[in-house]
Length: 129
Image: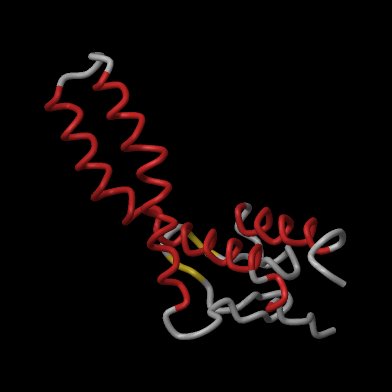
């Protein structure tokens, strides 16, 4: 069966599960045990999260995209309209650019896992019962 009917809802389900910090395959186990620690595999279905060595480096561009879109761009827009002085704008952008990647990187790894299976849905390992 092609990409058309049945697979599209599953692809979005994989992404929705990881956004909620759940295993993309079973939707029950956690990906992150707490904000700074990612689990190696699902405690419920046993799926290994890391597809290959270096897989979670994909969390870096996800983190960059989220920080630029949700932090830096709004601050620059507020500065552009004159609602914030230049010093504040530079300080907030640089401060967020240092702190937010540290705080949110593990969650961005979980998002990367969901995005990966959203586009490479055919690589989802079958569930072992």
